Image (cartoon, rainbow, N blue to C red):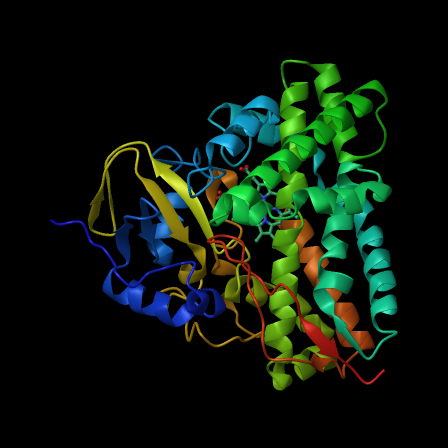
Length: 408
Ligand code: HEM
């Protein structure tokens, strides 16, 4: 059988970035698995195929999840080779290393730590919302959905609050670097930032090693001090580095998209304001409707059939999570945003299997707290503009700004 292709698919095209769902529906129906020569990846679009891939880590490993999608320039590569010391540990970690490290993280990131964090999340959200609502018009990303998850994940890790602005600057443009088409200048700048960010993580973990405190990093350090082979300092540094990225813009983007969808449909917003018990279902539907990791990657370890298409060993796969979550085979009326949907939780937004997102309970809590407090305190909230820009990359998706207004 010849290799299926889909000529019109361009994940960086402005129209696709703005609204990818109509084209994904066409692709799912016509060529659900196809090869894209420019990306050199096999694009997979159906819920059933993606779920099966995520659950079978022996045939589909995560080795390529953090690779830049487009090859880097020599200068950026040299900078990274010199000072960016990460090694594959979590989403891209080989087995059994990944499962060993993950099991320690899960023990430490227990219900207890989440319980300890809950009042901090609520207090911080309350403080940000109070400040935001002093004005009748504001950008909710800048005021709330970005700063809350960033400060929560940094508090969890133990990064000093006064470093947040600097860390935010160092993390800027990272998305376009790994998942977009960065210019040579951007690549050089970001590579320098990545080296500084990595060094910051190394220094921070060593400070906690010398003097553990009450935070997630120190809990991992205690595991290391009990048994240095169970978890090394380098592995801890990789985990901290990974979480400091994985744990905020992902949440920012779903929370922002949730507001966009809810406020775009007055009936749903008013229902939420009238009945806060709908918040958990609204969060789930927001996660389904607009997954913030719109795609994720895997690599085949052997030749395998995916949805009737023969894919060779070593093939790189682009899993269209956004498409899976809108697949009519998995969800009734998938294009309808419905906070009362019973089956929303079947979404693949947090993955499946051995790499299932371990920050999912925290993300759900943060998004829920933001929606609950806004519904309670600002039921007159509404969209203050129609145009929404999305970042130019193939993975992270969510409005870059969201202008809102209310009857202050
Ligand atoms: C709405 C917010 C979030 C979304 C959409 C999201 C999504 C994902 C996805 C798709 C994966 C990969 C799953 C796979 O490969 O099968 C993942 C893994 C991961 N996530 Fe999240 N995530 C979110 C929030 C968080 C938070 C708050 C944290 C940390 C506190 C976090 C930490 C991680 C880590 C460490 C992994 C790697 C797990 C492993 O490989 O074992 N994420 N996440």
